[in-house]
Length: 350
Image 1 (cartoon, rainbow, N blue to C red):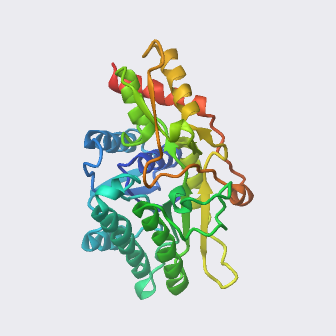
Image 2: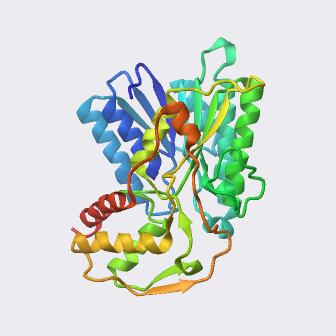
């Protein structure tokens, strides 16, 4: 989908989703599109992977002349720098993907989540608010990352955005729910059109090394025993990165219709709408690794009980996404994992 004469601010641009979103926009549009990418390139996982993503975006921008890409290294928790970026570049679309991710890490490092996910998001909202000062056109649409984690231990499936999500089981989930509440209040008070996206277990090439599928792969390749919690009977709505990006771009192009009380605010699920058991996921991953000649046989599994902060199942109801955009994620698990394994082989093993 085309963006013409548009300045787009993407925070977390060195991250997994931010990188692919910027890449897709740069490759699909002409030189009238300008992407301002913000990231602090922290060391939560290997910074070299983040730096490689930024280098690829800069290369695409220079070689294809499809759009301008400007990288600004800063934290969204730095209010002064964020305000300066908004004043200088005047983005019309803001996509906030910067966040401290991970459920388990939030147990041992809670401060990082408050700084990035709460203070940082507040800074983005304030900058959007003041983009309208002195009669300026300002931000036309704020799109921000939420998470399927907000559903916590809800037993009703599939998860619908109409469900109550007042009982988070991790600090990470609580911060993401707070983002939705903050966005609603700012949409109500200041007229900022905002759309939250609850992502469901995103995976794919150049993904996050802290994710389970990545650590599974690392251990399988080394012939190490892998651990499956809840005896492998945990279900996730694994969603391939290309489907996530297509969903974000669809949403970016259309700000939400006002609610009954006049608030331009909406939340969508983006998930594959087809949960897979962790055990089946690992079996499929091993088949893909064998097909690529990386391993010759499956590895030993250790079955363990559920971990604190984890949930039994995630399952996205995407009816709203289909109704409003005619779009539904559809990449099969085997196809997605095959692409990931091919990239992993090229990136780490050659």
